[in-house]
Image (cartoon, rainbow, N blue to C red; front, side, top):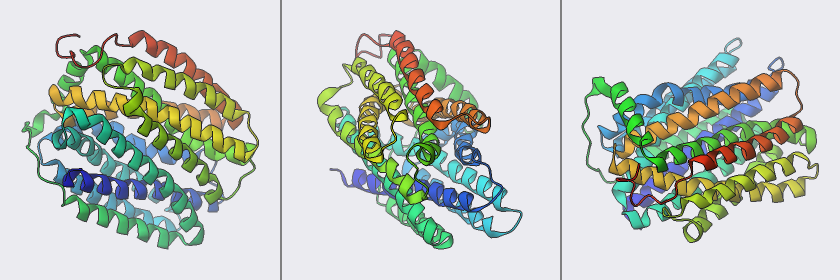
Length: 399
């Protein structure tokens, strides 16, 4: 494996681990303060995603105008600033705002990181290795996220300040490792034209049938993931009777195990030429979410969560690879990832707002989860209407 790819994987793993650990550290903080309603947790997730919606239109252009290695470093520095603000949560009267603003700024850093991270892949490896390396990136990221949430919850229960200091160390390590990634060619674009560039990139990508399908597919996946991440926190308390944050966070590890398995299976199941197969994984995910909503035994939930993760990995990895390939060949990898992330995060923002409103009105987490499974099945059926009949090989001519 190329040395730069190795450094990219480790850099991303460290920063993703810290991102998710911080959320669960804050989950512990929120749970320890009286007066913060149950809907504050999805509001916290919303603050992170809002940063993507606001800044995604220019993040891709920003990434394409600079060596992407340097953009990774800038993203981590921004995250460190947000993390510094989180330490203010101990000041009475600032708790709620310090948490939301600090996590929003960390989200801003993640916005900068994302186009550079994915945009580097087609610059470092050829087409034949792209799906495989993408699977490595997705798999290592998911492992980092889900182990990060367990460690974050565990450390947060022991000592919040210590836990946040460990997150600082991880961002610093990630920043230092990024210097091991080689400098890649820069696509120069005028700074003042970033909105115009974003709109132009959006239109160009949507002219490709495969891209329309892929954008819908990843938006579906991440909308479900965003809601499930916060929904499972409340559902576990009610259905499985789990109360400790560290116990609840373990549930996510089983999803991660499944996603890693699914990501590993992708190269032998789905290529860029038979992208149509991903819809079966989406159907499976919908059925399994409905099944999960009816469970009350933790061990059974573990099994179903692994299966949900497998379906998710099989769904998202080939779609990401298709978007990266077409984006690199048309509007530039950074611009393509920015468009992709903007669509994903608009979808997540809308679904999380709806979920927060429903939860605030006292609807049972079990009913919400069952409804989510039904919605996945319905949206997958609609997604089928945009299925490409061919692969991406002829995307330049078939639109």
